[in-house]
Image (cartoon, rainbow, N blue to C red):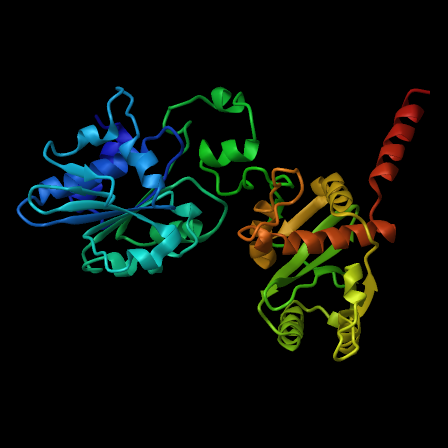
Length: 420
């Protein structure tokens, strides 16, 4: 019933070679089957006592689709692998065994309603889609010193799931596996390459890639370098997206060298008052050896709107602190996105100084209308992208980078000269 890689996980957990398991496995690898198999086997092995298992899904309603309605390769229900006298109650979202043991299903989207549940085995299914870090689930364990957590998912960028992977790889209590459909010989590389549809989706769901952008991403996966040395003899430019207390203010710093745009530093501030943002920004720039007064800052056009109480615009506030500010030309969001996309292959991000910004760019996705998705859950990923857009629009306006049309004209002229 088990494939080799599934058997390895089962033996490792049931024989207690490792306490916990981190499973990064692709579509078609049987993650849900494996999770339910371990849950049922754990109860059967410990049948002389009551043993409770909790399986979390992103939403509680997903449990029915993922587990009770799932069908195995042999055409039988996934619940067919359970103890013959185990009974599933859709009303309570729970499987009960004659000895009093249970497998209960819960949703990570409303943790407060799940409080009070305790289990000796905790399974987090598709954990990369949750909004909570791993420590939020510790209260659901009966005994944290000996109980087991199994985390399984496909990647969604370098979020809390990726952070857990880095931790688990260094911890002897964790079993870690990270495989793609090609690694598991479920598909060939050619079959993967021939799949139609969003390549980011395919990279995450089939190739288990943490580097890929999310499905529907507006920009391709960023070009990243581990570190970029700042050239202190060259100008530094910064695009700023201004937010308020409930929103983030984003800063994107760059240098332009031989038509390459190096993002040397990027940071977001959420829920911070203006003075605290300025103080922290100055401190971090000083650590980088950057004189904040020598940077050219580009602000959005609405930064000129004056506060009704103070009479100051946010541009005025920046200038009072010694920032050299100018306005980024007014362009529509889609025009700005087209410009950024046209120079995307020339943009290089410094991973060590822009990690969170890079992950925001990967999650900057389209809505159903083709425009950036600014719904409540995704709006937080728009700030760095907006700062980058203001930066590129102003660099093009100041002829620091060539416009899309200029680059096309140059290419055409080179072509004509070559064929004379």
